[in-house]
Structures are given as structure tokens and as C-alpha cells.
Image 1 (tube, helix red, strand yellow):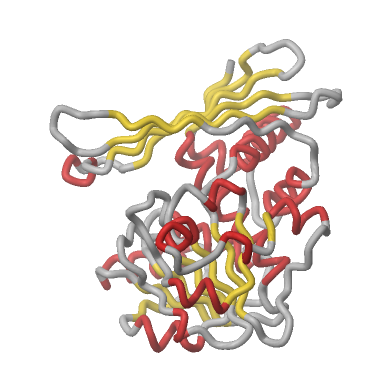
Image 2 (cartoon, one colour):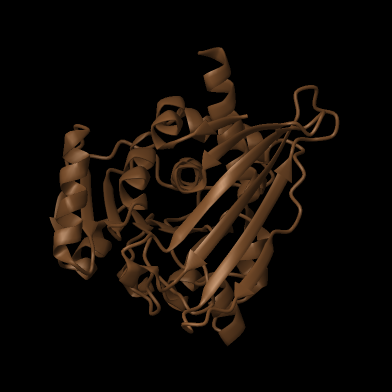
Length: 317
């Protein structure tokens, strides 16, 4: 059994390669059991969550895989100078059950989350979208910028964060990869002109107001993964054609689920899922300048597809 660290995962994956891989995966017949979500009580009182996310190839697949991601979310880890989210991915042979590899779950999640958002944008965002606003300056921010650059002709990339120095750090990291971006402080002004707005934050109150969004804008919501978190208000949802990565977004995680629970948005207004887009069952682009919105809560299929891509790339190297 092999162990894959960050560097090996980075060496195996590319954008748009992983985006194409996810497109194929969402059109497959992979099996996606419901993920298990456990609240972990801690003696220090800080909330913690354990997630178990399994998936496996279709039963008829000649080359089959089984994968499971185990993720811990410890909300008090910031004061310990540790990441709040940590995990590992176990990949197994789907025909024999033999363990094949254990991979860094955090790195795999960064790649697949960004790829899923870019895949949605490839179907939904305006083809000539050139201005991107990245809201949040965590570890996911550079991945999201790179992924969206792989599907749209971005020429103006703005980074906003509550701490300006964090936005500057992302700009500097992107510059090392030859990507020009700028740190900004006026969130509303940038949101009003952006073609694509990608949000990956821990916000508990909406950062993006629906009234700010221009016609043809595409809003990518990633960060809010509990019912106590929110990145956009109900007006943004009600103005938009909404696609979710999975039906779990309707009753789990922030934004869409919170708005439904409070009665400010209706579940029957959701246009469909990312799988519906990939299968061609629904159109991605909105009509008449309508805003588009993608809400991601994470799907085990994305992890499986990314892990298999890493494994097969290493096998062929």
C-alpha cells in the first residue's frame, strides 16, 4: 500500500485535467452512499465533527475502485495553530477490496473542490468572463483561481479577505506561479463588477449581497458547510439560477439550506445538480442575463475521481 503526500498529489493532478475527470465521473454510474456526520463532544467545549464519505465504481466496471475519506473538523484548532479540517483518503481495489493507497485528505480536497467549482463554471458562467473576485484567502483560494483560469479567459483577478495581509499573501503565492492578481479592500465595489465571484470563507453572516450582483454574474459558494455559516444572502439566491453539487446542499450546510430553513428561499426553485449539468439533463447558462449560482457542500464522487486520477497517474509514471 502506497502513501501519497502533498507533493505527489500535486505532481499527479492538473487543471483542466481534473476538471475533465470530474465531468466524466459525474456522468458515470458510481455508487455514492450517504455520508455519515458525527458531532464529537470535546472536554474543552469546542465543537468538532467527524465525516465519513464513501464511494465506489459502478458494479459493472472492469477496473473498479472503492474509496473512503475520513475528515475531522475541529473548530477550535485555530488557537492551537492547527488546520481546522484534516483528513485522509483510503483507496481500495473495487474487485478485491485490497487497500491500494492512503492519500493526504486535505490536499485531495483542495484539488477536487476547486475542480468541481470550475466544472460548474464551465457550464454556467459567461463564456467571456474575464473578471474574477476571490472572497477568502485560505488554502483553497489559489486552487480556485487556478481552476477557474482553466475554464474562462480571466484577465483581472481580485483577492479580498477580512485581513488585508492574508489577501496580499495569496497574491504573492499566485505571482510565484506566474499569475497576476491584486489584493482589494472594497468588497462591494469589486463584487458589483465581477463576472465570477468565488467564496471560500468561514463567514457566519452573508458577505455577498444579491443587490450587488450584475447581470450575467456567476456566484460560486463553497465555504459555508454548517447551518451556522453563510456567504450570500437570500436575495442572491432568489435572483439566480441555482445549481447544487448534490442534494445534500438542500438540507446540510449553509447558504441554500439556511435560506430554505428560514423560509426566504424555496427548494423547488433549485434548477438541478452538477450531475444533471454533466448529463445534459438541464442547461447551465441562464437566460436573459440571469445570475447563475453554484453551491458546493462536497461530494464523495469528487474525492474518488481525484484519488483514482492520482493512483493511475503514479501507476503509469
